[in-house]
Length: 239
Length: 239
DNA sequence: CGAAACCTTGATATACTTCAAGTTGAGTGG
DNA sequence: CCACTCAACTTGAAGTATATCAAGGTTTCG
Image 1 (cartoon, rainbow over the protein chains, first blue to last red):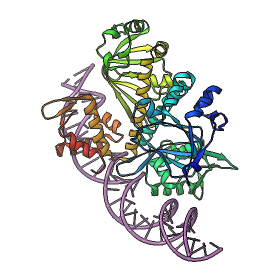
Image 2 (cartoon, protein in one colour):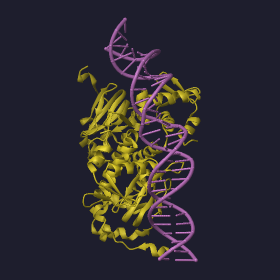
Image 3 (tube, rainbow over the protein chains, first blue to last red):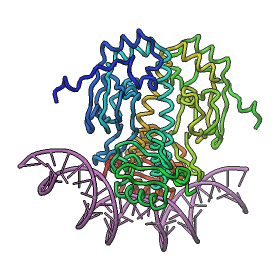
Image 4 (cartoon, rainbow over the protein chains, first blue to last red):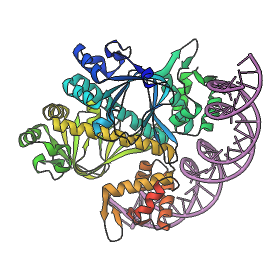
């Protein structure tokens, strides 16, 4: 597939994900101006948007698909920090702190993603304080979320963390069905282990325990949550 | 000791910690205006500035002393997120994200700390963009630091994390001496365990191993780093 | 000086990792 | 469409880092 095949024309003004994004507060002229420097590309599963330690050149805005943000250890083991979905922005942290990327980003599910050059992004920050404030607020919120994650990793068992991660995934990617909620995201057991911070085998064993106890159902790779309340108990401390 | 005994008059303009702080970029009139709403109090070791889950009323600026920022698990176990020193600001994350405090803050070493009401802080943010940018940059940097911490907790052994924490403490609180660097901060073994994310006994055992291997010296509670390079090897992966 | 908090060491328990081997599933080309 | 292949998944067995429990020693401080 040639480069031109992957190129897309996605106008922010018509983007179905814009309402959920930082761009929700942009006016018509701001949206039009964005189109100039913007480029949109279709990515296949497994493709990497950027690597930890490299210089950020702009921000990425997810139109469709899902992207994992992760750090690699010196052993090559992956720790997934976050999973981004349509409407999410990537890469602004590094631009605002004037640092290199602190994590890598790889596509989990085929995606359409727009790239906005650094200069345009910074211009918008200056011109639209509502946009700026939304970004700031989100970063400060994320910092709180990361503190929570640090405490969980230090204090909770793998079992508790897996239960917690399943509930988190259910909140974000859940599709309610009859008597159960499907976690609709293409995660391998290894990915799930890299979210929880454990070994793949451990995830598999614990999932089958949760299944045995009737908390979840396993539908191939996909997971259905049957008893979220019970799962929440598992996620807490020896509750 | 009555309240009035603890009250202090510390002018930001004369504060020895200002040069290292976000207030370094404030001009004379901005500093004068700050004095109005400001209040400065002397805190003893063990006193708590604010609790996780409560509403932030303003920001704290450390003139002298040290403060631990931590989260408590449902079991009451503490995870120390950060240790703040003179010149550091506390509490602005929660104000910017319009959330409750995500962690608690307790004094580790007797401290003089100024409180600046939320409104004055927000006023400054609007008036002085250099100040605002410094805050934003710091928060974005911290987010990167927390990601690193998450990856370390998920991927490194306790031994590696302890070595890493000792080096981090050495960087921030180290006083170079002849052939060794003293980590000059009043940390109990339990505090150190709560930084590393492990049990107190494990810290003690690992410290005595590091001592046996000549990497550190134990001077009562105080720790001296003798071989930082070797310690850095321990901090990395099975290196 | 005495009590309390902190530190240290030892013994035991276990959650989790790692290694190994077998099974299933998805994608590809003949 | 089937067979081949590689990756992903699963289960088992064994090893280990670390937590937990217990008890004695030491420092700190009112």
